Image (cartoon, rainbow, N blue to C red; front, side, top):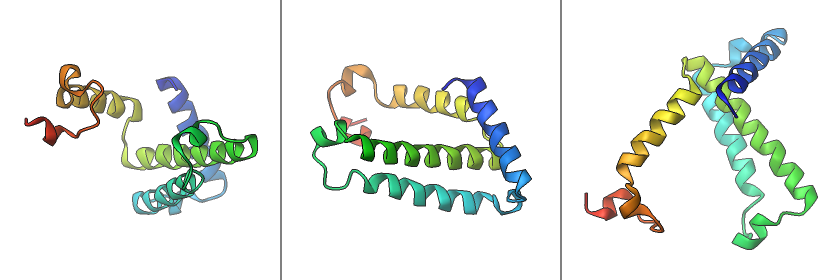
Length: 119
């Protein structure tokens, strides 16, 4: 999703919430809580699946996962908006930070966390 698409989505979500007078409930606390609830609902679809099964979801389950992913994204965009965070910029900054924290020569093919690299 490009930056313009995120801005358009943010604006659509603002309009949606305002039209229903929900924006007053969209505090950072409430949005963060709603986000984690939706993330838990997403995870539930993968509970007890093998890695192979998680890559080959039946269409019905895939459709449910798709809806949960959308819910997670919606609440994340709304939370970022409530806090004045530019999601695309924040993600790019985090990628740069992770690139420094997990250099390719140490991290390639290695699932160990940075503290296990001995840095």
